[in-house]
Figure (spheres, rainbow, N blue to C red):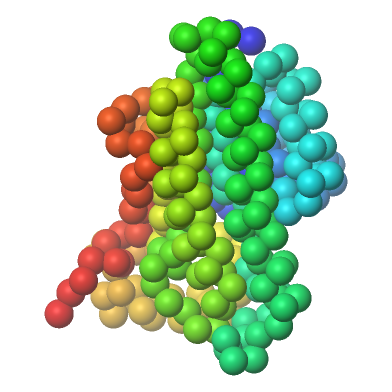
Length: 260
């Protein structure tokens, strides 16, 4: 295929869809992954195609080996080779927001399987294909972007599983950046802040953050939007930061700036 191809996990809605739209607008072909039936994501696929992208849907659970293999089967059929970019975006919140003194192994495993284990082993499989492609053709361009969260360093004691997973994903970024550096394959991490998605759509959460943002939680006094993260990923995908592998790009409106 003449155009580069990206796999965006969790790419049919929210931050993932914002990323997919931004890359489609830049001339990328798109594979989006999700858990819903294909008919449920037809509107999203239509929007991406309208932007000029060839699009495939790879349904599957990245938290399981079988799910990842199914996703990669779709990718390999679609590309006829290796991906040019993997965006590990798929993420889940705990089934119940519980204090760390009350949370359960079920909660922990549910979050860690998708948000950390899935991203690790999907990166491993894709990286192997990228290394093989790069060795066969030195002009091949590949890369990985992990969508983490300010929760990698900002504590929420009522969703500790999520914080642990995102902190772990930050180390995954550094590990793969260090390993793939000699192959010329960069790896980056993006940390969004408070972002308008399904995860923050409940009236209680929306009201909470509306109030906090109005009171100055963020230096830029507004919510983040999926397109904010999409712009950051697009810049990395273009190769605008060739000497910055392993680094964190903050997209949080200045929320994490220490202030008095």
